[in-house]
Length: 407
Image 1 (cartoon, rainbow, N blue to C red):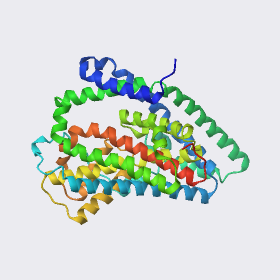
Image 2: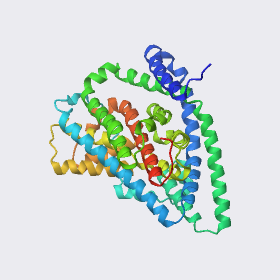
Image 3: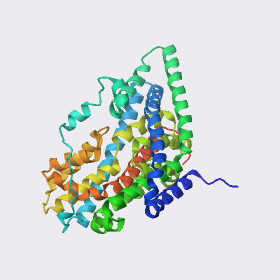
Image 4: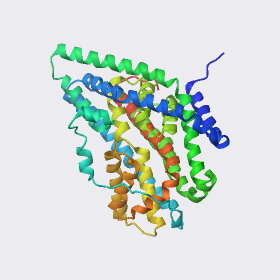
């Protein structure tokens, strides 16, 4: 009997989870623990996988010149694609104007609006860890990535014997973590089923029905989703084709498992082990590239989130009848870009980012309440685009470095 491919298993599980939540909502609490265990297993491997991957990747890059070139390509790609996503969102929200005529009574009451008590500069400065073990214990990814990159870079400064020993050790750790990841991947359909059932049950339970939500904020949701789709199927594939002449559709097919997992979990970090496995085994990208670009991308590259933030802020301004000037909309673009980069590791990152952008142009923070009802649904889509952007970066940069890929 032919075995069903994993991405089809996950897709069926996703649909089954939605149907289970709709028709058997009272029983969702009995399967909730499956999703919790699945997410815990993914989170368990993240830090040792990321740390060993970056150290072995950066340590294997070579000298300062190679490291600088790869770093420049990676950061440039992330900044440019995030900026393109924001500008696309800005154009769509101005053309469609989903906020015009919105009933402000629809706003959900927010018990606590997250305080913006750090400047963007301070957030970025926090990437330098005072205590790396404390950062690991609390799961702060930016400091972990910074230390791992520094550690890997300075491995190249040691003697040949030390280099061989250290790189051998971290390569071995990475190999073990990938074996664990491969085992966890087999549980993905079960995990996705339970997570989707819980998410849909919460949405329908809190707001009466999905139809009610969609009818109230349908145009806003449609604008965000249109932007995310256009960025995924036109902007990113065009960049891949025009720069390195790779097949973007085959690449997207190869990434089906991490993309479906990202959609159900709404977490780039939790999906990272699956993303690394897919980009290396399906696309043929080396660990030297994936170990550097993907952990960094999961932390600072947020194409989907940046686009969403821009659309949401302009939507709120339209709903309140506040017309933003071209200069103010430019501030929205730049602030959304910086906030997307600087929000890594912050609890309630999405709301903190939104608060930063709203404050930058003087819009009421209470406007966040207008979009909270559909935030969880849109979070699934924007996280998927975030992960897709990371994988495009890894494949394009690998090809530009002379690697032969399977796409």
